[in-house]
Length: 104
View 1 (cartoon, rainbow, N blue to C red):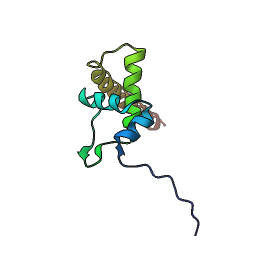
View 2: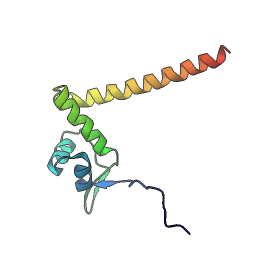
View 3: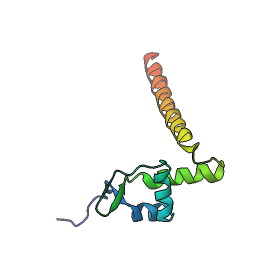
View 4: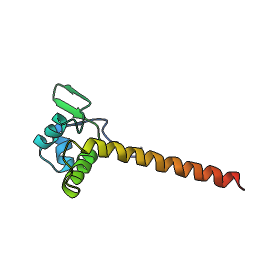
């Protein structure tokens, strides 16, 4: 039996792991929690726990704030709009594929 195992991603991360992965101080992560820019999965012994996607979201928030000079109040709206644009683009691809196969 081989000792090689597929990579497994954690289903949750603690505050320090999220901060380290995002390249920020844990205080920045907690500030984003206070501003409701990210949401912990829950608070249990050992501190708040976060989704493995939290570092990616923190990076996106940091880029929107620094590159577009958006204030923290506007960032949730922009993030919501980006999600909607992604959904619309996926739907457009689906429609285009369906129309392409129907015309054959």
